[in-house]
Image (cartoon, rainbow, N blue to C red):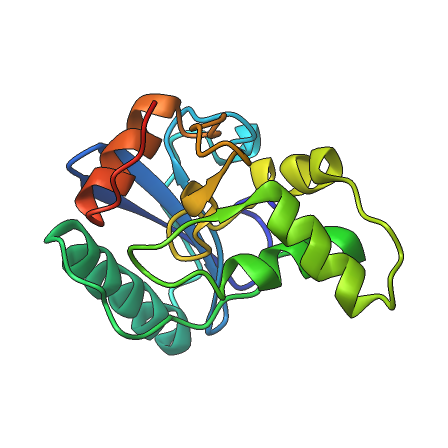
Length: 177
């Protein structure tokens, strides 16, 4: 992604955990990252702007409203339209992430088992699932922070383990670290 792509809008959101940067193409949220997190697209830099079409403006407003509700400690109750680019495997993992309810968690192993079930029993690796979860380009809204180790431990988070802990606490999830 770069700011020269037709239809790409970049926006920022000041969250209680630090500034976030998002990208919207048309009516879809295509990325949302904590600034400086692992896998943050370097080509975004500190730019703002881009195409500011009406659908993008509506989506940006919807995402910021979602984030306001979320950071106030409430389940937003809706999901802005998203479209993330990735391999078919990553897309499958990210789709499962969207099924994890607010205030609940799921393990990497559970996600691997669900993928295996969806693919007719083809064994899936929890480690491969972890790689896909870590490369999720739409933080919070596609809730990769709700994925934990099989023993209940908090494992890596591209935004930083401190942010993962804060997000799970915000949702009222009690986890042993």
